[in-house]
Image (cartoon, rainbow, N blue to C red; front, side, top):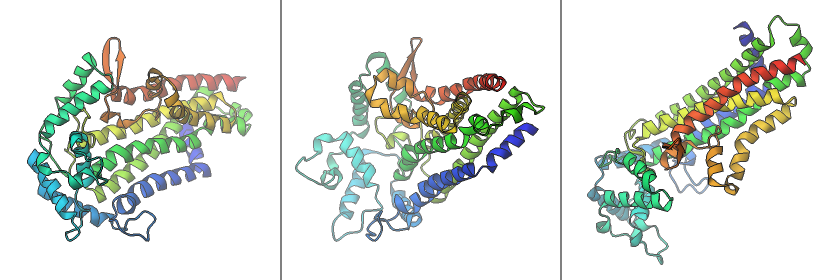
Length: 402
């Protein structure tokens, strides 16, 4: 424990680590959460003095949207959908109220997806602006047809199609409606982007953990200590894991705190199908968010294990950093140039896959069984990190004895 505390203090004393943590917090929590809610994404529009075109009034604007949605907060039916579209079209008239408080983005996506035959190709406006509300019928029947069509278009037929249709049948209908845009921002974008940013700063902070000893020529000094190579390696690994947990906790507390402040908890029981209609997972918004944070945490731990292993394999801090970053960013860069089976294998690396796979119907076939991709995406990365630990200890011990 004493050696661990010394290594932990040594890591946090580095200016590079302190700067990494500060920049990560600023980018994800301050810019990605607080300012996103208050200004970038949810500030009221028409402020042309701003480069983002929004006012700095996200908190009050969100409350206005939620207040407007109160009148529609009950099971979503064809009649409810038609009423919302009519109200939007009424508010869109020049002499009427502003339509910004309506959930028009979500409504237009639904209409465009489920009623494509109503689109007027010669009309430059959004479908929600001109569609006849009375023709918006059979919402759930059309959604089921859209799911079937998506699976077949994706080449998923037979047993695999039945697998996802059976999964979809567990989603209760009719759906409970509430304002969707806030949860869409959180679940479909914000949380899934955290991992990519954390990977950069974890690599910068931890890649010199072992290679730094060679860089600083401290082999002789370590050889005189009363602790063995294995104890030293375990202390360093424990420090790396501890740093990752501390960074994740700092980020998670900040982002969830901002979410609770600006969005609150309402709408947590809405199905994720409101974000992507042909999603088949029987999950609500809260379950989806919990999964995504779990994905980020476990992927972070898996990436930490890989980074520490690479740090023992390379004597140069720079090479160790580049190799760690390559684990995440190279597979993403080459994904479109390799076969699908290779893409699916690379997705199992930490942060290469995406937590937003809960909205998709990707699957793996293992030992004759169909396994939905989110199950493996949350398990395999951390398992890779755990496998790296004994190899890291063995490699470090061998190199230091040379």
